[in-house]
Image 1: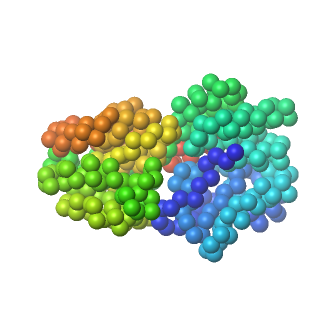
Image 2: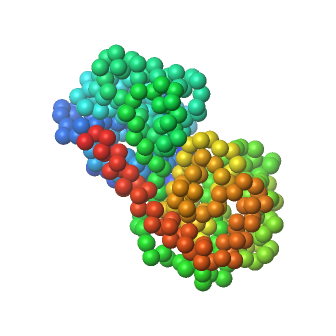
Image 3: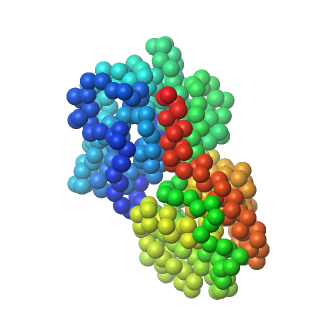
Length: 371
C-alpha cells in the first residue's frame, strides 16, 4: 500500500531550505535529537518532487527529515525508492528513538516501534487499499503503537472511519506556493478590458497527443468545447501553463491565447496571480482534493469548475461557480465577464481564504501532530 509518493512532471528541481533536513548518511551517525518526529523523503534530481509533500515538509519545524537524493541517470530513482524499506529496517533503532515516524507506505510499519503517522494523499478507495490500512492499524494496536492518519479532506477521513478505521485523524488540505499574499489585490477585475482566464497542467494534450485521452491531462474539452466558442468574442484572454501537445496546438483557437509552456512552480505562481479566473475543466471526480484549486486560491483567483468533490472548496468558500454541463461552464464565464462586481467579490474571498491554505500555515498544523 503506497500513499502519497509521487514524482511530479512539473518543471524545475527543488532544494529544501528547512534546517531540519539532513542526508541519510549523516542521520546514521546522529546520536540524539531535540526533535520528536522523523520522516524519510526522496528528492529526485531528474524531476520535481511531490507538489504537496515537498512544500509542506519544507515549512515544518518539528520534524527531522532524512533526505535521499536521486540520480540524473535514468532508472536510478526507481532503484533508490526500492531500497528505502531496507534502509528503515537496518536502521530501525534510529527511527524508534523518535516519538513519531511519518509513513508513506504501510509496509514500513513492521520495522518501527514508535507512534506512526500515515500520509494518505490520493486514495483510490479500493478494497485492497482499505484492507491494508485496517491491517496496519490492527497490527499497531497489537503492539501498543498509536496511529494517526493525515489526509486532505473530511470526505476521505469519513470514508475510512465509516469502514472501520480507528486511528486519530488530522485533515490538512492542499496548499499553495504563493510566497506573499496581498489581501488588497494586485488587479481590479472591474477595470480590466479583457478577463484573463488561466489553466495550469503539466500536459495540455488533445486527441492524438500522447496524453490526449488521459483523465487528468486530456484537454480537448477545454480547448474545443469551452474555449473555441468564446475565444473570438474578444472578451477573454486564455493563459495556458504546461506542455501543449502538437495536436492540441493545431486545434487551439490561438486568438487571445497566451502559451507559457512548462514552467517552474515559482514562475507558475507569478503567472497565476496576474490572472482573474482559474479554470478546472475536468469532469472526472476522484473524491479527493486537487492542489490546483488551492493554487488558484493562493493567487486570489475566482474559479469556474465542474461540480466535483475534488473541487468542493469552491462551493465551501464561495469563491466561484460550480457547474454541471459544458454549456453552464461557458455561461458562467460570460456571466463573470459581464458582472465585474461579482467577479471582484469572488476574487476578494479567494484572497481572504488564501492565508489558511499557505504551506507555512499547513506546515504548522503538521507540526501540531507531533508537539
